[in-house]
Image 1 (tube, rainbow, N blue to C red):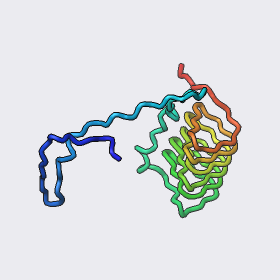
Image 2: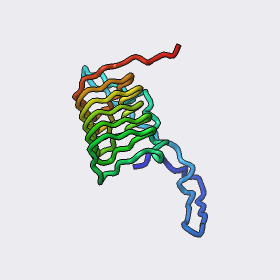
Image 3: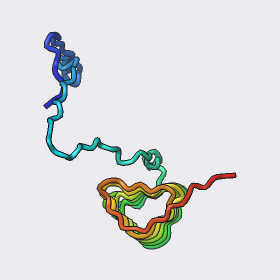
Image 4: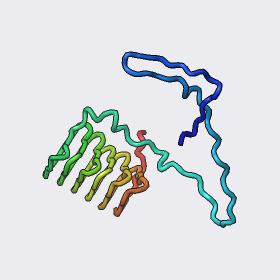
Length: 173
């Protein structure tokens, strides 16, 4: 059901292009008023929705193209160093260091030690992480182990079983 109603006094106009026919009978539209809340004798007061996090996610999406990618069909054991971003879509077991962001995608897993500016987990992480800035667990993400970070963001729908150490922001003198 649409929440918009058509203006009934608008004439129907049709525009034909080489690809499809466009009709303007649906325009302009006005919103349909929402129903009034029902009164209740319940002692429970509804709580307005709250944003999951007011902190922005690290800007990883803008730099995906320049990331070192471990694709979903790849498993690696060992050590990985990157001067930029790392995107894990497969499985990694070992030590990983990135100057920028490490992103563990859904269906991906990382076991071991990671060091990065930011870490974003949408898949599975089990180990120790040291983040210079932010550690974020996305909905559906699962984290176990030890986390050392300045900013910790745990999104609704994630699973976390960790020991956390929160560090203060370093100020330059």
